[in-house]
Length: 318
Length: 294
Image 1 (cartoon, rainbow over the protein chains, first blue to last red):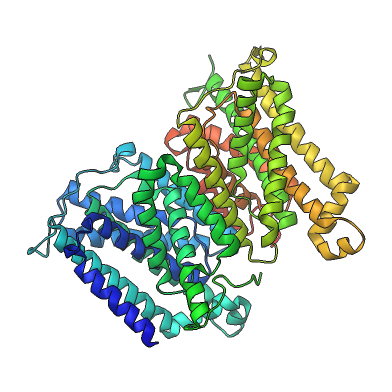
Image 2 (cartoon, rainbow over the protein chains, first blue to last red; image 1 turned 120 degrees about the vertical axis):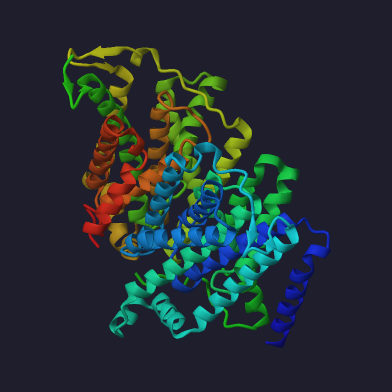
């Protein structure tokens, strides 16, 4: 336990010092946003055993709504982020309500299809800017005194949001609610027979995950200053799955590691290998599934024996 | 010229045949998905990639080896089916003991590899396959003009679908296939080579996808992402129809293609999403799908 605490402490120290270490701040903020996104995703996949293939819908719709509120209605960043997150939560309620009617692979296919529906809406709706997306989104001033134009201030805002999400998910998983969610993951018929209304638990997990994914998307659009179709695209849903799987499904820190690796790869690998990035990501996917199902953090935990190591998605009980 | 709802009948009929053409592809693809899932418990996310590979095989065969359309119609599915068998032997067979979600994730990765590589090698812009001379005319049905190639695609797909149905439901090979779906260890104890059967099934399923790709190559642009969005629609078709029934997959695929075609006439903005909306409605009313069993 102490070793884990030391690692977390060092990471926190590093995160606090980033603006003075000469790391490109926008890159670091993007990384944190995707780490947030992956943590939110992991709440659903790792602790609820629901494989959503449409999570970009929540990330992207929040990005669009936030950007739209800022550019078309001159809202401040706080209102805009709140609006984006609320949109993602509402969408999560709608899509989750439909998708939890089926299990396993059907759940995955349904979320994929509904995610594609959101993509087409974003492509054709009058306020989304079509193929161009919404560009030139100013960051504005938070609460009237925090100038987000400064990368340092924006960085600390994103870092605070990330820490908030990370600790919140830990809290949720360790709460009585989280224990029931895990019980449903392990053995759904048994949870039903114990009297739990499992659909309510699953829907809440879905909505929580969508909401937090929305927060990540809203912040990401403010960081970059635009919301584009790639935010809602199916490939983004695939990326967040890869981040979670690569880092370690069902571990707290795994998704952060996975997001760091995937975002870094995309940022720097494309300079070296050009357009082969997609194919390489596919290779990582295949390698993960074939030989690395616990993910990096899961494997480490199993080797070191620090946590109860378990396969990320337990064997089927259908 | 006669009109319905203020829309010329010829336009409606034109979109209807286009819808039937798309529906034929949906039927061929969802049929392959259903057969693979039935025996192997794998949802083949790479199905769209194999469809794309089929189209590329036809196009490259013509450009580099002078393979004509009719030969490509046989050779491309065979080649892609062989790739499928190799994929099953190399990767998929390691996942049968695991949660089906891993099969979905693995084939998703495979689709990224195939489509990413094709994109890198052949670029983003597409090429079209020339319509073969013998199919390039237009049929005058007096109430409408029907491009011969569209009629051919519909007929060929329906024949391929019912051929598959016949093999599965009426031959001894199909009987062992259905038996393996019910109880594979028992069938193996009777001396049937079940691993070979599984590899052949995967190969056969993706060969159907490749056949759809060859049929589609003269009517769509052949490029690396032609299968990406198609496979998502086909997944929705499968959810609507339920994967339990072969005839169900065929009927649902054709019907949704037609509905999509009609939507293009009545309210074009919704034509991309109508299948997904129908899926959501079906899930609310009948979560197991129209022909589903569970």
